[in-house]
Length: 320
Image (cartoon, rainbow, N blue to C red; front, side, top):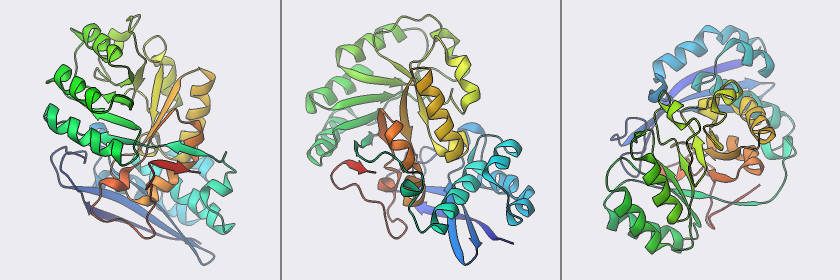
């Protein structure tokens, strides 16, 4: 029998606006520890309020199948009994961690991932144009060559022009976080293309993206809230050229790897991301790095403190 423990952790953030509650200064995580044959493994995920998740609901989902987990539930069976989301992600990542630790390997070693160095994007939060430009310049000086710029519906032109002037050679991704409307979208896309933005992420709400059907746009658009798992891909045809993959959203590494493979078969670009998280979740995302066109897994960088040992990216590169 496995020994399983599920609990909630709260971690302070360096700055408000990063947690699912937007203006909160801390992030709540659900954590699972599994001990088997004297080996302790761990998985974590942040409940996503955008999809109706809170810690209590995630822990309740896990609690229903806790006896199965203790008896040796396999990852393959897990995919069948829980839907995509944080609950499945917590369990799935813990099971992957357990399998790797039993072999005395890292997850990257266990999965025999393609080795290499991958540039890590840094998130730029909405603020005044001058502050965002200043922060972009600081990130560039620190070695970050890709920036994921979060925007709302305000000051889009002013913010983006200021950022591009501050970092003329940076790879810029723009995450509109479902805050735009179909009216005026063409002009905004043209503005971003003129500023050599590489990718626009989820400009419209997940239930409003039918407006993207046959919409002519000069830069690739990436599905985030509109893409949970492989079951989402068919509905994205003719609307998106890229998808965002995160472990919490798709339900863990098992589905994330399958989703990445299916996306490549459809010639979709891939962005891999985490929200604020500890190094446990960032490390669980590392096997996705070879699949990613854009890698945004610096969730631990938003925390005031991290687990030990922390996963560090001092050069702005992820080494797998």
